[in-house]
Image (tube, rainbow, N blue to C red; front, side, top):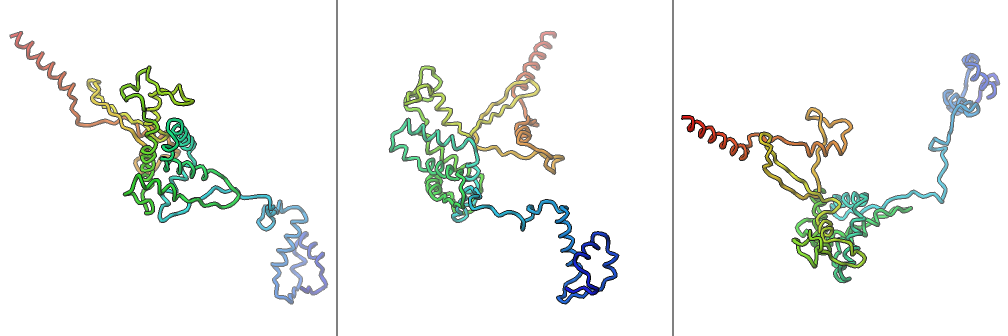
Length: 314
């Protein structure tokens, strides 16, 4: 670039620092077609860098240091999509993140190994496949790794032949199928082989297995019926007039259909927590137009008593 009047770059820098009065009287001629704004931008950047007014340039992408060869990006494995089984992959990834499910599976396998022979333990293909796959999903590596759930799907298909695992399905329904299939497979490990259900609560009834002599029959039945996702929901119907208990029922469940707490019945409450959803789920409900038999009985006794009293008075 040529500047008429013999103005040097040093002079330009001086004018940039002390004002643009001199520059306004200059006639600029660019042989290469560059504009004045481009030169001013470059000069301004040079001044800013020299005066230390630009901060840390390493934060910019083009100034950042490249990672050394020894640094790696740690990744968790992924799952191969076989057909449209993404719903199942979501369940498996969620189970791999659950702190209580993997230890539960390992404990089931250990219990079965202690109470059964090797041939019977080999009859747990679904439990073994799921435990192995979840363990692999939790292993963090330095490269990309894709795992196949084919072995698990084949073992699961024996329990639910009418549920197509390669087609698009509901994840909640598939989760319940998986839990029920697991229970069906390893239930024999927890069923007592010496005592009946009537004897479960007998204090003298114990089953002796290697390394677990202190495990009572009641504990084994509890483990059989209650896994990490199992629970018992109780429902009690009470009359508010006479305070009598009308009915009591218990129902086992694998999952609870919790709904978020709403404000004015339309929007979700700000800061809604799982505890809030549980409180809403177990809140007492009022049953309208229900006739309590005990209240009718009490009313009938009072009526007959009053009639008898009137007859005696006459």
